[in-house]
Length: 206
Ligand code: HEM
Image 1 (cartoon, rainbow, N blue to C red):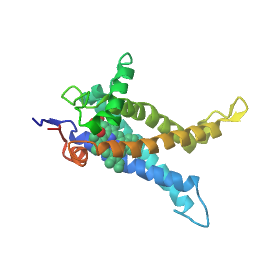
Image 2: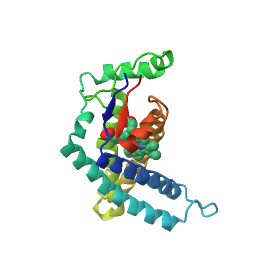
Image 3: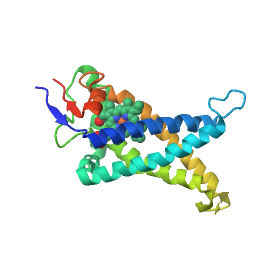
Image 4: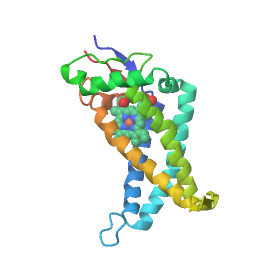
């Protein structure tokens, strides 16, 4: 029997869609600055810089909503990783996504009140939200105020290293976004996860 869980309260949906819009704007303006070409301007360079800076500041504020929200509402418990069991769980989930799913098997980690995410979702959300986004924010602020960066790291410019780290993590978050949208289509119906992120209710299979 299909069961419904209220997994996405209003604050979480508000944060998620704000965060999604900000990340997309950051990726578009970031790419536009990275590959700026006066002959084929995707966006005026100065405009891309301003939008990127303002959006980055807003992303910092929205990240605080996520951190505080996760702490005070208990949503953070879904992100806890058990380092002893995670690798076996990941293998099971990976096998399911590559074989079981196409054979019509049942998911190895069915969603319930205590388990909102399967192990692959859990590790990717935890790494993106607690490692990548904070690193992006810290390096972004350092690039906004270059005087706070370390000037010299073993003969290499600290600013260049910060910039490189910012680019690499930005690339990882962009890849995450594409994979995330693809996996979001694997639900009871291709649209059911998207609907859940709008109305708050997650519906299980059957
Ligand atoms: C157009 C862009 C996006 C779409 C369509 C989208 C879609 C979704 C959907 C349908 C869900 C609910 C299903 C699930 O639990 O997996 C979800 C959850 C989630 N998404 Fe996204 N997403 C987008 C962008 C992002 C971005 C940019 C990030 C982070 C950088 C992100 C992080 C998350 C997280 C952490 C959750 C779980 C939230 C929770 O329940 O605690 N999403 N997303």
